Amino acid sequence: MMKSSNIRIDISATMFRETDWRERLAGIMTACGESGIELGVQLHNTSPAEEIAIAVGTGLPMTAHIPLLCDWQINLSTTRLDPALESLDKSVSLMRRYGIDLAVLHGFVMTDLPIPTFGRGRSYDEAMGEILRPELAMPGSRLCCDFFDTAEFAERRELTRENLAKVASVYPDVKLLIENDFPCYGAGNLLAECAALLDNDMCLDSSHLWASSFIYDRDFIGETRKFLDTGRVRMVHLHVSSFTPATPKTNWGDGHLPLTTPNMMRLPAFVGCCREAGVRHYVLEIRKASAEDIYCFMEMWNRGEEK
Image 1 (cartoon, rainbow, N blue to C red):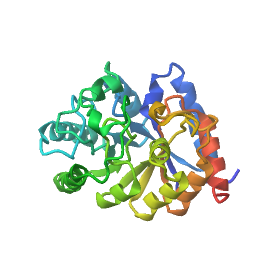
Image 2: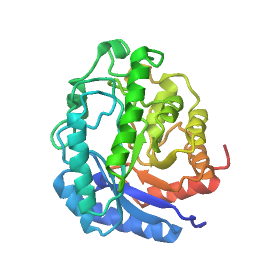
Image 3: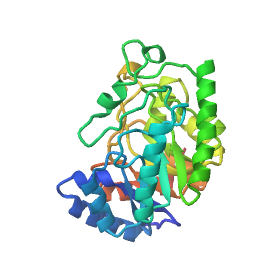
Image 4: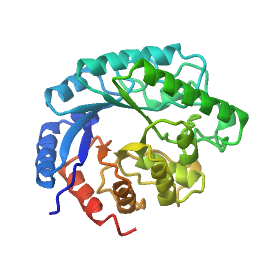
């Protein structure tokens, strides 16, 4: 087996919700050792305190998907920033406690309302449903329509850019990556042209981009290259979506499935593009992660040139 070169793979702390997480972790550690991969953990924005404690107890290096243990999501596209800043400050304090200096966040939602966090007893749709704007959605759906040419979108994109710069100056010891969103509930950071204008380093999510590419009639690999060509992608959230072009647009959902799941995503080409762009930090945002995901990743890494 070919070994990796300076690759870091984080498992998601959501894996610790599985009853056999110890066996899964042992297998993943073995697979990473065989492949020459550095292993870490990424705390998830839905992680309860006990899950964070387990992650800390592994002794593995950690990153974070914020907010952590907060009441409000971090939306930077609004002038009503107090809830977001409260969650950001609380999350950074927790990160400092555990020596974490790198975090991912979703920061661009087309609303001025405070957005409740989800997880820890509240579902994603329960939280996000409170801020649904039907005029920004496909009819009868939570999925975003094409509002990218509107004045409001441009204004909120600029607010997001300005506020990302401001929070970076407030927390100079913490690196904040903004993630491309799943296209629903008024999320704005969906395509490469928007992400480039935010002027901030990024985490590129495979299944979010797969959904956005289909819904807005873009080529998935072409859009991947556009994100990477910004030179801003520092991390990849890697997971599988089982949705296909045969699925009606309004029925699409997210991914977070193991890499061995049958799919139409052309993930070897996606990983190959990321490798060629110099991205070396990957997060398996997969609750049921296993050693097979590590081996599957390495197979894709080694054959990614076959695009």
